[in-house]
Image (tube, rainbow, N blue to C red; front, side):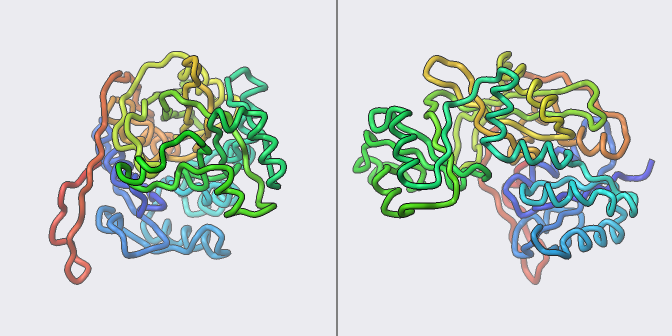
Length: 359
């Protein structure tokens, strides 16, 4: 059998080494060649990939045509997108890739639209009985103040975030009781915590729509999931507790057999009609009830954790898109993943050392 060539977009992202590792270490001795693309050339991912091409951003009218050209040049079998804003573009143009015998491991346009919009996702949760945080939409400072009041602020913290974002971009926790003097001396600056007064000074009287949400104080979980593109079985959901998070990136996770979260994720995957590899995030409220935070209808940054726990949903996505057998899943619960810093040394664009390569 010839090697399987997988094109992974956004190979400059922190999660690319894990995606590459999952494709190579697939557990079935399948020979996989990984081609990376990115809008930037000055990043480590180009040196880790088996081949690399620079492409324009997803909002460029030539994005799809350039990616199709890469597929032709590299004889790509499967395109595995890692960039959120690429998803609707690729979903609408899958026929262009099929003409060069490449499959795109991406869900349908309607599934992506509902999954990426946090307000729509919460509405779906309410329809199917998956717990969700109390949420209000606001476009003016008056609406935002009223929502904060309904959620018990300032006695209780509240969360503010855009309806569509990823990597904790635009997320703020309003917390009047936070000891900002202690945080100044003892914590690295993150920009996550703020107050309503500071927000008002920064944003003014009106702004693009934001969601004002119930603050969930408990543990946070990411779910790595797989669902075959034909809508059949199995739906696989692997929760991992986010034990340490820095800048929105998981640095320590533990794969955890949380029955309620698994059930919720499986139900949402089917209701949203998601395909291939994707993920959800849940957080526990004060009573320990898991409530939805968001959905990522794509490969997730630390999805390699599930690979290390014998549930390689990343390779499953590539194999199913290529029409090849999907390996069985037998999760090894309670395994942990620790991320650490590595680096690549170069001279004249050639790698001279890979320091602490990590999956």
